[in-house]
Amino acid sequence: MMLRQTLPRNTRSQGLVRQMAVMAKSLKYTQYGEPQDVLHLVETQLADPKDKQVLVKILAAPINPADINTIQGKYPVKPKFPAVAGNECVAEVICVGDKVKGLQPGEHVVPLTTGLGTWTTHAVYNEDQLLAVSKNVGLAEAATITVNPCTAYRMLRDFVKLSPGDTVIQNGANSAVGQAVHQLCRAWNLRSVGIVRDRPEIGELKQQLECLGATVVLTEAEVRTTDLFKSGTLKKPKLAFNCVGGKSATEVTRHLDNGGIMVTYGGMSREPVTVATGPLIFKDIAFRGFWMTRWSKENYDAPERLQMFKELCELVEQRKFVAPPHEMVPLDKFKEAASAALTFKGFTGKKYILNMS
Ligand SMILES: NC(=O)c1ccc[n+]([C@@H]2O[C@H](COP(=O)([O-])OP(=O)(O)OC[C@H]3O[C@@H](n4cnc5c(N)ncnc54)[C@H](OP(=O)(O)O)[C@@H]3O)[C@@H](O)[C@H]2O)c1
Picture: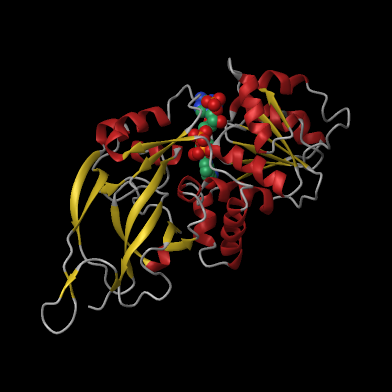
């Protein structure tokens, strides 16, 4: 086997023979349950990458709500056991199989597909499951680029044709997706109205989101009485995003313009989306859902997918797009991080990123 690689070799026989035993430390589970109960740090020796395979060293991998829900068995994606947890990451290419054409050792890559199992120090993936990203994209930004920023990008692009100056409204406006929406709205000259739950340090949170590009941030109580739209200060939103459900979603729909669309992409309150009858009839508002995993599968090789990554990476490199506030956590501290990442009451305030660099 010929490998384009940079790892130690010896010179047995005529050719160069690889002499490497990469031991991966992975967070594996063999049954559903709470992450702190079912995840175990397991060492496995990895086989050399063959043909179109790529050996990578994972540098950083975030803990997203969907990762926790998958481990709990509450997500539509059901892994085959034993499974390595985690879906997103940024990794460095260590060496590649002899049929790999587009990746070089040393390059940074992100996964193009979910379910690869990224909470591990090393892994062997297929070349077509990876996308090279510039090293100018910071580790936290690269590790978190494939899910939340892409979700925000697609929801802003694919449901309503927006023009500069148009307004978008969303609840869960401090979530990682919400923060991505604010930043893309600023980059694309859209007005971004965010709704968050009230909390003691609400002033600080509003300021933080406004720095990212939110035009206005309102609490759930404030949005019920706001005259921002009636007064004409902002155009009525044509597009709304909902990741909470329940009353929060109902309030958002009351502000939609005629023919407006609310896209639901999460259900953090675990309450169903209830529709206010008036806006449904008299404004003919519509309800849609969005799932990035489905979009990515259906558009695996689509040019608009590569275009999306290109634009997002450029925004990061231009410092117009940053990762959400986060804490880098060593892999062996995963229990604390996983249980803190998704609590029923919320108010986590930061993304936990497993740091293997
Ligand atoms: N459909 C898709 O393709 C897609 C893609 C990405 C993400 N998502 C979903 O989007 C949601 C946000 O993901 P993320 O990574 O952006 O999350 P995140 O950064 O961890 O933020 C979580 C958000 O949920 C809110 N929240 C937490 N518990 C809550 C509760 N009990 N009631 C109301 N709000 C609550 C938090 O607000 P507080 O600060 O007030 O707690 C925060 O705004 C998740 O449901 C995730 O699964 C879906």
